[in-house]
Length: 97
Image 1 (cartoon, rainbow, N blue to C red):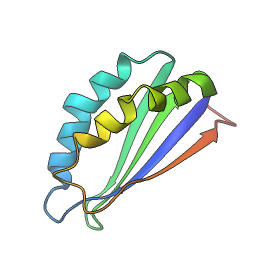
Image 2 (cartoon, rainbow, N blue to C red; image 1 turned 60 degrees about the vertical axis):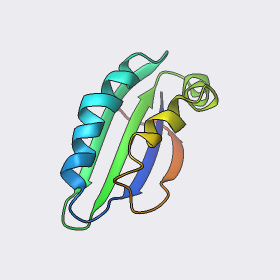
Image 3 (cartoon, one colour; image 1 turned 30 degrees about the horizontal axis):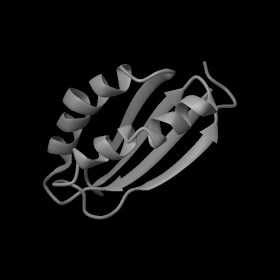
Protein backbone atom coordinates (compact mmCIF):
# COMPACT_ATOMS: atom_id res chain seq x y z
CA UNK A 1 0.00 0.00 0.00
CA UNK A 2 1.12 3.56 -0.73
CA UNK A 3 0.14 6.95 0.66
CA UNK A 4 0.14 10.41 -0.82
CA UNK A 5 0.44 13.15 1.77
CA UNK A 6 -0.60 16.65 0.73
CA UNK A 7 0.07 19.55 3.08
CA UNK A 8 -1.87 22.77 2.58
CA UNK A 9 -2.08 26.22 4.08
CA UNK A 10 -5.64 27.52 4.23
CA UNK A 11 -6.74 31.15 4.15
CA UNK A 12 -7.88 32.63 7.47
CA UNK A 13 -11.53 31.89 8.11
CA UNK A 14 -11.72 29.26 5.32
CA UNK A 15 -10.87 26.05 7.20
CA UNK A 16 -14.49 24.94 7.57
CA UNK A 17 -15.11 25.60 3.88
CA UNK A 18 -12.03 23.53 2.97
CA UNK A 19 -13.23 20.66 5.17
CA UNK A 20 -16.64 20.78 3.50
CA UNK A 21 -15.10 20.63 0.01
CA UNK A 22 -12.97 17.66 1.04
CA UNK A 23 -15.91 15.82 2.63
CA UNK A 24 -18.56 16.58 0.01
CA UNK A 25 -16.59 16.59 -3.24
CA UNK A 26 -13.02 15.30 -2.97
CA UNK A 27 -13.72 12.19 -0.86
CA UNK A 28 -16.55 10.93 -3.12
CA UNK A 29 -14.36 11.44 -6.21
CA UNK A 30 -11.52 9.55 -4.53
CA UNK A 31 -13.74 6.53 -3.92
CA UNK A 32 -14.18 6.22 -7.69
CA UNK A 33 -10.45 5.91 -8.42
CA UNK A 34 -8.82 2.56 -9.21
CA UNK A 35 -6.84 1.24 -6.26
CA UNK A 36 -8.17 3.80 -3.79
CA UNK A 37 -7.75 2.56 -0.22
CA UNK A 38 -8.79 5.41 2.07
CA UNK A 39 -8.75 9.13 2.79
CA UNK A 40 -7.92 11.09 5.93
CA UNK A 41 -8.05 14.85 6.38
CA UNK A 42 -6.30 16.32 9.40
CA UNK A 43 -6.95 19.99 10.15
CA UNK A 44 -5.34 22.49 12.47
CA UNK A 45 -8.01 25.18 12.59
CA UNK A 46 -5.91 27.64 14.58
CA UNK A 47 -2.85 27.39 12.32
CA UNK A 48 -4.89 27.16 9.11
CA UNK A 49 -3.17 23.98 7.99
CA UNK A 50 -4.50 20.83 6.45
CA UNK A 51 -2.91 17.43 5.90
CA UNK A 52 -4.64 15.10 3.44
CA UNK A 53 -3.59 11.46 3.29
CA UNK A 54 -4.86 9.20 0.54
CA UNK A 55 -4.11 5.49 0.50
CA UNK A 56 -3.57 3.45 -2.68
CA UNK A 57 -3.31 -0.30 -3.19
CA UNK A 58 -0.20 -0.02 -5.40
CA UNK A 59 2.37 2.58 -6.35
CA UNK A 60 1.04 2.36 -9.92
CA UNK A 61 -2.45 3.30 -8.66
CA UNK A 62 -1.05 6.32 -6.83
CA UNK A 63 0.91 7.44 -9.91
CA UNK A 64 -2.07 6.84 -12.20
CA UNK A 65 -4.20 9.16 -10.04
CA UNK A 66 -1.66 11.90 -10.78
CA UNK A 67 -1.06 11.11 -14.47
CA UNK A 68 -4.80 11.04 -15.23
CA UNK A 69 -5.31 14.61 -13.99
CA UNK A 70 -7.46 13.43 -11.07
CA UNK A 71 -5.10 14.86 -8.41
CA UNK A 72 -4.82 18.26 -10.11
CA UNK A 73 -8.60 18.39 -10.55
CA UNK A 74 -9.15 17.80 -6.83
CA UNK A 75 -6.68 20.52 -5.88
CA UNK A 76 -8.52 22.86 -8.22
CA UNK A 77 -11.62 22.45 -6.07
CA UNK A 78 -9.68 24.10 -3.23
CA UNK A 79 -8.18 27.01 -5.16
CA UNK A 80 -10.46 29.61 -3.54
CA UNK A 81 -9.53 28.56 0.02
CA UNK A 82 -5.81 27.79 -0.19
CA UNK A 83 -3.24 30.34 0.96
CA UNK A 84 -0.43 28.95 -1.18
CA UNK A 85 0.65 25.98 -3.25
CA UNK A 86 0.28 22.56 -1.61
CA UNK A 87 3.21 20.27 -0.91
CA UNK A 88 2.96 16.64 -2.01
CA UNK A 89 4.92 13.59 -0.86
CA UNK A 90 4.50 9.86 -1.43
CA UNK A 91 5.31 7.05 0.98
CA UNK A 92 5.14 3.31 1.16
CA UNK A 93 2.85 2.30 4.03
CA UNK A 94 4.95 0.28 6.46
CA UNK A 95 2.34 -0.50 9.12
CA UNK A 96 -1.43 -0.37 8.85
CA UNK A 97 -3.72 -1.52 11.63
